[in-house]
Length: 107
Image: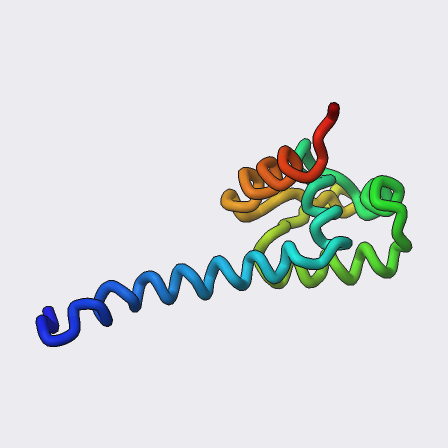
């Protein structure tokens, strides 16, 4: 243990966690990606279902899903000719639920 700089020892894990959180929040900062992720909270959806739910084109939805897959936030599984997408990162659901609670009140 480096007793000359104990703050540096504590800051390294905190810095790594902050960087990881910032990357996740960057993905959530795009309204289209956020809407896709929110649409997946209840369960799996196909690209077509996502298009209809968020009111976006197939190319837009597919492009955003590709980015979300590359970032590890969604996963997909082929079922015949359809691809079913679901949330992949367990940290995302509670964040989305809280965002919904704060920004999408039902009253």
